[in-house]
Each structure stands twice: as C-alpha cells, then as structure tokens.
Image (cartoon, rainbow, N blue to C red; front, top):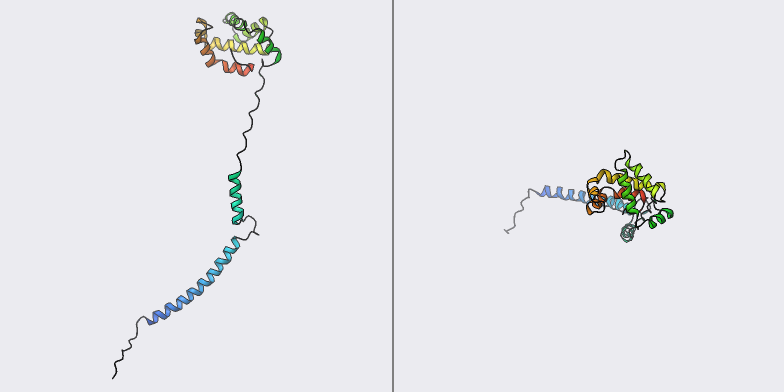
Length: 184
C-alpha cells in the first residue's frame, strides 16, 4: 500500500466558504458604495450649483484677499473754526501781541470778586480790545477757570511757571476749543 496522506476534514472549511461569501458580498457592497461616493464627490465639484466654488475659484478668492492693499485712512476733518479763528480777531490779536497778557491779567484782577467772573472777564476784555464778543467770551472763560482752579498759583505770580502749569492742566484745552487758537 502506498502511503497516502489521509484527508482530514478541516473544521473551519465551512467558515472559509462563509468568509469568502461575505467577502464577495462585502466587495460587491463596497463597489456599490464606492460608486455612490464617487457620484457624491463629483457633484461637490460641479460648478453649476450656486454657491459652490471649484479649486481655481477658491485660490483666486484667497489670492485677492491677500493681494488687496489696505484702504487709505480717511483724512481727519478740519477742526471747526473757534470764536477767535477769523480774520478780524486774528488781526486784533496780532496787534495786541505785546499787551494782551496785560489786558487779560488786569481783567482777571478786576473781576476776581465778581459773582460772575466769566461774564465780567468777557466784558472787560471786549471793552479793552477790539475783539469780537464771541472771542472775548473765550477769554472770560479762561479768566474764570484760572480764578477757580489756579488762584493760589497765579495770585502769587501770574507770569510764573506754577501759574502757567496750572492753566495748562486745567484751563487751556477748554480755551483752545472755544477760541480755536492756542492759549498763551
């Protein structure tokens, strides 16, 4: 007798056939799923749909955002003219250049005990100069501000550094806003 190897049935032969069947079914199912996925992907790149960009459009859109220069800042509006920022008052202020501080100082002293320092100062400046009433009002306001905030510093020395610093800190901005010219 010849030696023939005995054929022993494998226990998992049925499971191999089942796995092959499932594999085939899985592959067939995968094939169908892949076709569906491909169709969906093809639709995504369809530029006929509104709101969908293809890669070229996306690149152009991204590039245009990067390449655009920033807009120029809008110019600041010209400040409105203050009460003294006009030809007539500027001419008078120019002629008073040497005496304006004396006029304002004298008006400040004469109005110090007034119940309305601003009005008193404004009337005094208007009476002693040819400045307009509106421009004189700005000087009346700085006289009143100085009396309220800087009486001690300016009472000791109206021309001193302490008085000038106090007016700068407390009064000059309002004067410049009113008059449209720098405080002296």
